[in-house]
Image 1 (spheres, rainbow, N blue to C red):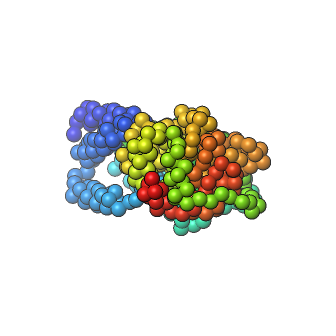
Image 2: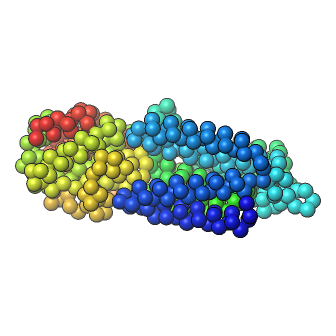
Image 3: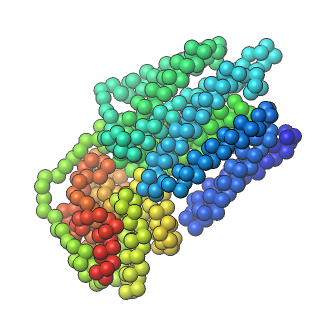
Length: 462
């Protein structure tokens, strides 16, 4: 394929990726954004295959078929509740790909066209290769830790030990020094030592981060995977990888910053992996206190007499797959003339946009879904707040208790509604490991049970 044509096609794929990001910024245009993204990837893959320096089309076709088959199986079998760990797993694959491509380019530089007149790897290519392998290795192991934690393979509590930050600094300094050595004099031993240290660093950066902070971790790893792809794009001299990686890296970084503000975290601490450690990992349990428990019939009676209801979904809704039941509840209320809205916290669920995707799956009208800053002031004028499995993001301690580990984190002020109906299996704490003061408020009625079953019983009672 002529170089000019390849450049033009890569430019077209980059434009499609930009349109995809633009579309995904709004629920109403998200489906079109996905289509743009798929088209952009198809163009990029086709251009890469036709412009490859090898004629091994059979092997490439086999690899594409295998990857596509795996992707299709996952797409049809994955449940929405498991989407966060799927994203983490995909990030790990991007990181691993960056490491493998860097290794292949290191051992066969001539095949990648990155040698100088003396047959040595160009200095610029060594720098690009070094950055790609380090970021890729950190992304790979960090994403594996996130996946195993989200999947429940390992506990969600942060792994904290004395001197962990000092260890990260020492590993980071050694990596930088070795990278300088590698750039000056390429060495197989140095290459693999750097790779090994970066793999260890990925674990030590993510392990101290508790389950409550997983949404930010997913966003952070998304950014890392983008920068890893961009670094390898320079090594391969592939403009599509460079542009796409930069788009993913920068957008992931911006999203991480937004998430940090939503959780009252330091953006620098997130990048360094030092946030969410000791504070978020300590379980703070309140003494036994009385709560008001009710039934589906009690909740239906309260909802019948309400004029406005705000539904606050959380991870409990995702686990129970209750989004369709919630939609049925909202429809039943609207038929009675009740005004219904949905309040979405930026870190509800286990990844950014998790609740929005679930509600869209249930065909909830987009104009009824509002972000925290759009709807938070409405709670004090609302008759009922229906909270379904959203724990830490509704905890008044984040607003009222300076001693709380989550103090300063913006929350949905559901306790200011006239009545709070809180659907939850038990009084167990959320991912932050702290008791929710909302459970014990006089205007809160706890509805203990499975979120889907409880909501369906309320619909029947209505």
